Length: 364
Image 1: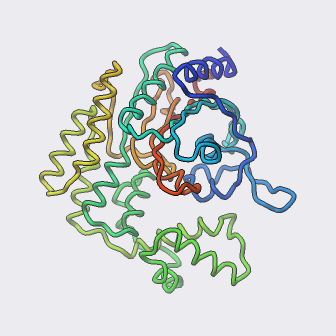
Image 2: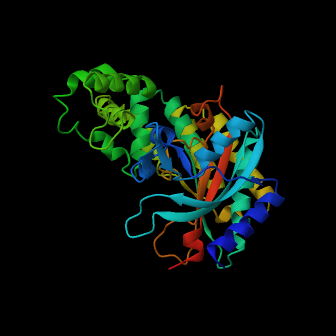
Image 3: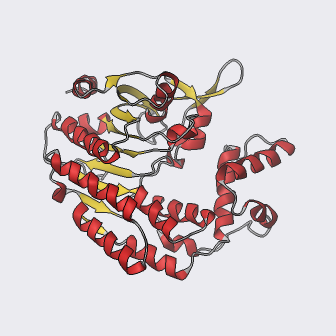
């Protein structure tokens, strides 16, 4: 099966399930990816300009373009989309153009049910490629956010905790000193400490504009603001009790039922209310089982977090056990706030996933 054949087969499956195919433009506004994508995508984008000087990029992924398409045509109305085509990212030793296919469900309010549906369709799609049973890894950014909020951690420290976990460094990195340059930037760090990201970004942009600077070292004002926010949050300590609870949470692993039990025990022992996030987690597991998925074979890890800024809830990766590099062949999750950042009047629930066709068809 070629990658083109794989796209045809996957799109046929998704369209039968009500996910209409769309193909967003290859050229996309660069600013939305710079502001909303993770560092892993931002630093690998192909960026250009149009005749008027507006910054554009070759489509580095499909989720944001699909969301922009949805907002322009459907607003908050529920819709399902499928897609397949080239995306563009700089990849050392590999082609910067490669094919992806996937699906996105936008606007449905039956959150746990549609989470389970997306995972089930991802696994159905993988069956078309044959091979052994895939390895399914689950995570939940919603649980992590709920725990941090229940602990009453300040916004700047919360951003730093999440960034440390997503980067794979863990809480040990929160003990590192401010590092070189902290003293000379003390005034700016104090000025933005505790500010919301958008306010800090606007503040840094104003300073750079006054100085006549558009970019520094290839980084935009938004990226520079994030770095200063990280420095500022270094000045905000994490209370010992909160650190102990978070460290215990990050040890939780097992199948979804085992994980839910461990989180409930942690919440009870710590006197925290996590019922809302846990209710969604357990309902999702129930819908997975109702679809015939063997949830006991799935692996949840509290440390599992995807390196994209817009994921806010359920996340997953699927691996082919025949691959030796541990890279996922499918990945996705829930991003309920992304459309609001793109211009929606209020949060719109959304979840989706993408297939890495070069890893499926061209296995090593």
